[in-house]
Length: 426
Ligand SMILES: C[S@@+](CC[C@H](N)C(=O)[O-])C[C@H]1O[C@@H](n2cnc3c(N)ncnc32)[C@H](O)[C@@H]1O
Image 1: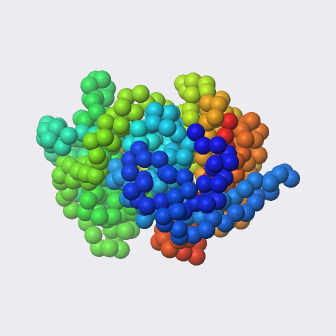
Image 2: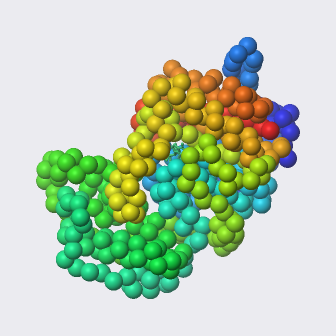
Image 3: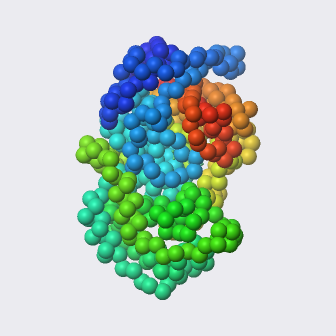
């Protein structure tokens, strides 16, 4: 396991490794000088009269070996798989337990599974489990074709809510048939890995902005717009929903998701999935996780009130029989920094309980309000109050990336894309 001194030297002398060093399961070789691009800038963060180091460099980049396509499931404010990969390499060994208390689409846990680690996932929104768990059990395409062919399609039926602004009537009937089939299988206790895979992909294909989705052109798949707003989009674009073959689209997306997986990655995922724990709890209270068992937590919390996780997912919730208003009530949408701090204080206490001695927490803080709120200065005392040691802050500054501004989290200023991660150890 890396020592504090080794970690400091590694970050200070960091140079981006060649892609070959990042083959699945490989460890980053320390002091690799093969690919110097930027020199680490070392700054200091002052909190309550104490000084913590901050390391700024391009520690990971999309130019590295492309992330597995298995990650390509849209979700609001998700991070890139390169972020968890960097810390999994540094702070864990195969077989260790990796945890994400705010798992979202499951970027941390999927990457950990690919790399042969065990995983625990939690997210108060039950959609998170629906989107992530099935990807630990990769289906065979012929099995998928057979199963899709067996799902009974009942024509001429429409949903209890008006969805005509999104779907052609025949597409809508297919979606409802699929929804009922999955609901019945679940209720009867006969739902299996294939069903769950189909549910995950269908949930993902419900709406989007290309012909790869079930809907007419609309917002990207992670932000379902309201029916009223969709009518306006249709009028402005002079469009009416065309028929989409839902089974064909599920198959097409399934093939894309799994096409670059190696047999070893598929085995790793299955092994991790079998032992995994998927919770849908408030991250402050996770009694199912035994004390002192997690080697590494990698997470990005809900940032103040900038992302409406429940509202954006109303159609996904409808398809899965989830009451989105109920979810909205339990999701942390802190309107003030003080409220956010109080929630995260308890989250850190719980993280300390479950982390094993020698374990780590990598806690991402976004750039809020154009960097005016330095969230690391809020987060460092929270971790320390929970008894963690704060190692410092890692800032990944990726140059020349074209990424969108994620909802008030300014993630793309002056041609740079930054992630700021506070590191704690126990
Ligand atoms: C920034 S997103 C995480 C995205 C994730 N890193 C990914 O790559 O997909 C924050 C997540 O926290 C969840 N969440 C909000 N409040 C929560 C709470 N109190 N306990 C657990 N999860 C919560 C939201 O549902 C959302 O999925």
